[in-house]
Image (cartoon, rainbow, N blue to C red; front, side, top):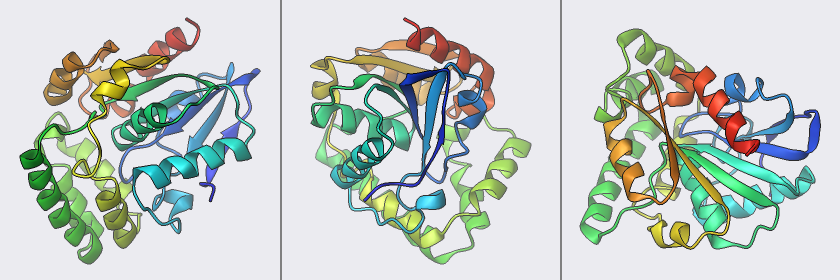
Length: 253
């Protein structure tokens, strides 16, 4: 099954930037960045349970990556970069490391976790995600997202930024978000560090300078890392101009 996506043809029709949003996002999430990169064709993907793919069921990382592969084939994309934020970054890392993708030039990951490394961490994460999934499935989304964006990883947000995200994300389907959260939980994601270390594709990592958790994670990975100034975990939203500039440098490299 293919995922719903928004395609934009660029001057260079042979090279695509394929954008993957974070949890509760949709095809609009990367457009402030991507639409400044008109030399390249852009594909803004809606992951399962999100946006125009809201009716697409989520069954784990392997299934999501099969859906992504089918989507690339549908759009005849043979030469591309994957650009993913948070959940989208985790999907990109899994996708790149689990199959041979001859058209993949590289991945750019913003604030994506490579995977937990012991069973105790996985059990704790599963318990946390199950609690959040129950809330997403049963409570008003505005209330759940208000609590969601008060987690420590989003500490750099001010109140206006937080409320803007709450209003934006509350348009989703709570049960579908709950399904995707559990299907792609860090508790069920394999540790991708070994696959990333053995890669034969380019790997770049973006991290907001205020995102202390993921700055520490970035240091563990053998990737070229860019710190995005004046930004926290959602760097491409907080400083889209710098993220776009860095992307342009990478894909021209």
